[in-house]
Image (cartoon, chains in turn purple, orange):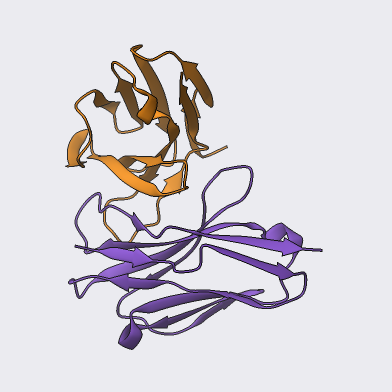
Length: 116
Length: 113
C-alpha cells in the first residue's frame, strides 16, 4: 500500500525567508509519480509539479524548487524568498503505475503561513 | 474557460436528506474522480471512473452513489445524509494513467445539520 507523510503540520515564516516542506513516501511499485498541490485559503487545489520515479533531477521553477531523492524516499519542496501569497496548505501526493484512473494518495498537508 | 466545475459550491442540509453534487469537465479527459476532504484537511479518494466505467471504489458507504452519464460528467448522489458526511467534496479529472496530473474542481462544502 502506498503512503505519503508530511511530518510538518504547520510552518510559520517571515516574508523573504526560505522554507522547505518535507515529504516522505512509501510504495512497493518501481513506477510511480509524485506530485505537489497547493491549496490557498480560497480552497481550490492547484497543481504545482509532477515527478516520475525514473527522473531524480531536481527542478526549479522561479522561487520554487523540488528535491527528489529515491534513496531516502523523499520529495521535498523549497520556496525561496517566501511571500505572503505563498500562504496555503501544501499537499504532497503519490500515484502508482500506468493503470487507468490511478488514485492520488495525499499526505496530511503542511499549512504554511508567511507573515509580512 | 476550460476547467472542472462543480455545483453547488455550498450545500447545507438536514440529516436524513438525499442530495446530489454535479461535476463537469471540458478538458477532454477520460478519467474522473471524487475526493473527500475532512475537517482536518485530509484528502482521500472515494471513486474513479474511466470512460464512464467505475474503476476505483474505496471503502465508502453505499449511501454514496456516483453516476457518470458521459465522459465529461461525474455526479455524486448521497442518500440518508449523516453528520459525518460534512466535508468538502472535490471532483477531479485527468487523462488516463497515473502519470497524469489531476485537475480539481473548486470543491463543494457539504454541511449536514
